[in-house]
Structures are given as C-alpha cells and as structure tokens.
Length: 177
Image (cartoon, rainbow, N blue to C red; front, top):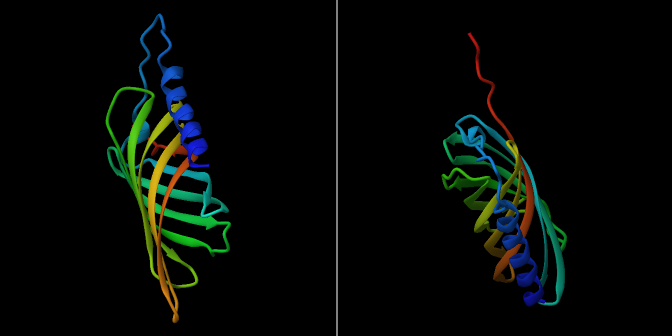
C-alpha cells in the first residue's frame, strides 16, 4: 500500500512542476503580497492512510496570520476517523522566498486531544502551488509522533503521511490617503 501512496505523491509533486514549466511569450510577474505581514491564511488538508491494516482518514482546518514576511502562526483542528476525538493545537509555517507561483514551505504542529492524554507533534515540508494570487493547492509530506497514555499502559506511534490541501490568503487592506 505504501508503494501506491508514494507513487501517487510523486505524480502529484512532479505534475505541479510540469504545469508551471510551460513556456510563455511574456514573462509572468507573480504577486507576492499574499506572504506579507498581516495576511490571514484559512484552509484545510485531507489525507488517507493505511496504518497496520486499518484505514484512517483525517482532515484538518487551520487559520493563521503572517506575523512577518514568509512566517505564519496559527491554530488547527484535526479530526481522525480511527475513533479519536477532536484534536487542537498551534501551528507554524515558513515559506521560502522565490519569485515563482510555487513556494516550498516548512510546517510544524503540536496537538492536544480534547479528551486528555499526552500531546503529539508533526513536522512537514510541502509545496504551495498558487492557482491565483490568493489561493494555493498544497501538497505536504508529514512525519508525526503520537503519544497515547491511560492508567494501564502507554504507547507511542510514528506516522508518515501525505496531505493535499487548499489555502486561501486574505491580505490586509491597504489604506489609501
């Protein structure tokens, strides 16, 4: 199953480069205002995993604010179909600066289960493919570590996942005098 997921991820990743490498007669100037301080990010991700023979679908909704150029801090809400409850936590994103319509980024989360228990974390790297000045389709590879504990036992699980998501960038309004 992992080979299928890897193949699909590789196809999605390379297709984004092929789509943006098409020749154009006029140079394209990309608007990079969506990564300026004060811009709000609203979006979400979906992922399907097969972990130890169990099918897991999870999705997240997130909101963040650019606190400086290329750096966003915010929060996310995660839902996991494997019987877990809602999971919340802070999130950070860093975008690498370039003048293209696709931007690489790093992502980090710390999540807390609403039913208690130990926190978990995930770190990842991704590619934001801007389909317009203010909308991107994101492909992210994540590594996460989940801790579960109760009175009888404690367990830890590691998880590698591929997420596909959509982000909307809402820039701050420019004042006119």
